[in-house]
Image (cartoon, rainbow, N blue to C red; front, side, top):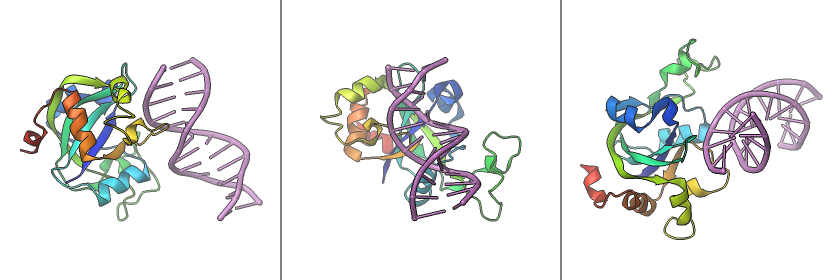
Length: 162
DNA sequence: GCCAACGTTGGC
DNA sequence: GCCAACGTTGGC
């Protein structure tokens, strides 16, 4: 079981849309590091923090879980998609995705400022807080996942597994 | 809208 | 394989 943080811009696809969708193919990832995490380390049932970027304030809005194994991202073959990649071939797809399933919203939104307030404390070493980190999918330590959930008002993190 | 910090591309 | 140019991310 691994833990993750995934970023999304709420203007494009926020936690509300995630909730309404139930399960959503996480398409459009065009970064090799992020792809490799999905390909090599994500397992069905892994939990992820759903982070709102490019908004005021940025922060963690909810929890989702991995609902599928990785498979080729169909948008890379769709010429009308902004994620179209002419260099990717159907018999050797370059980009992958997984499905995410909505788990819950944070009872209390955890802003980036609040995360930063623990940057030298309970969240020391969290990748999100490192300067210049632009990864849209990144691994998270279990203890950091638990701390953020508690900051967001989720007391029993173990219940999220069910 | 600005810009720092990256990541990717492509010429050499 | 180096690195300059360019594109993108994301906080502010």
